Image (cartoon, rainbow, N blue to C red; front, side, top):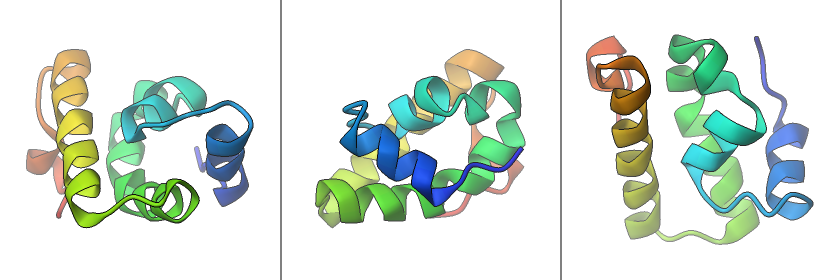
Length: 86
């Protein structure tokens, strides 16, 4: 289930998505419908959101950590064991 760059940018600009977790869990639903696909999308989605929302390195790290916490709540495990890299 792919998510396009346009969906991510639209979520930020038109729907006021302000967090990586919001974008992957609520706006695109990718992390809800297919956890592994959500994990693979973290880096490219974070890069798009960084350009759109002008995040710095510290904010990117906070966003990844928040995604990890939400993923653990939803799926009972972190994505680091599933291959998510920093």
